[in-house]
Length: 450
Image 1 (cartoon, rainbow, N blue to C red):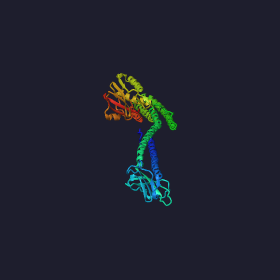
Image 2 (cartoon, rainbow, N blue to C red):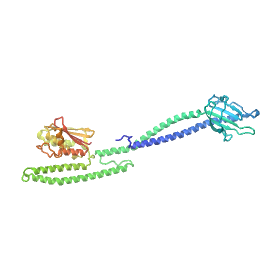
Image 3 (cartoon, rainbow, N blue to C red):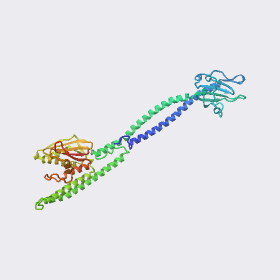
């Protein structure tokens, strides 16, 4: 099966879609929260500077010559630190009052910050300090009095007073959003796995049907896949009906052909009708051909018969007892070693046919010992039938599975046993291989699906 992140995987598609959606949502949330934090920190900073401007405006008074002066010192923290960016300044005409941190230098808010503003309302501005530092400014223009130039009050803070808290908050925000994103992806993964679990259960149910453990897919399924299960069960029912009809037709054909052939064989058993036995041989060959093609048609009608499950132990035991009686004069020893619970996915009658041909062949040619075993392989279940007879050379082994080919005419048979076994095995997706046995004779390996 493809893995969960295979290109065509539903789980991959759902997880990728969730990843994109979560990423977009987290990016939008991060930007929005960042803007809110920026506005909040800037608001706090502006409030601090506005408080300084209000204190400056409240501390101003007119002195000699109608010039402004401060009634008290306003160089309290943080405006008492030299060159830290926390400055204040009052300018009226050519007269200037400034904080000690400016060291006698001017703080210029720029013409753009002074123009177009309503007097009495602080407004923001950005500028550069006397030593080239970036500053955040708040400017307050007092309403002019008769004959007196308006007073412009400026308070500043370093740009780092805004960027520093934002960097700290941004780092914490990124960490929180990252943890949130991982939590959401973990929850999405669990949700996707839970949501797709019925499909995995459906796959196992179909595999059980294919292996022959059950005839239909259980109808107790989630509502979304219940129609699919109903269609699959309808298809299985239709295939079963078609299979039954095919079996009936094959049985009818077998009955229609075998009865005349049996009649001919009985008639030709009289030497008066067949002095040299030629016609009897032809009738026997016809009977073998009919049996061969009927078995092949029946196996093809099963569509590979992957829905039938047949245990191996019982038919092997029956065949062992049967052939032990048939070849009792040999004093046969038929040794059977099968793994517990061994079973194949094929029709029971076809399994009897294949095993019967192989065991019969081994009993005919053995000296007195036949060994039957089985082992699981990647291709299925490998059933071996070995004997201690003369065996076959590789060239003769290939010739032995040809239809109607008999390597020894002195032994009874029609030459169809091995060919029928091979073709039936291939129709089930397996195969037949003939080779040399460790016992000295023939080793027939029959592979069938499990």
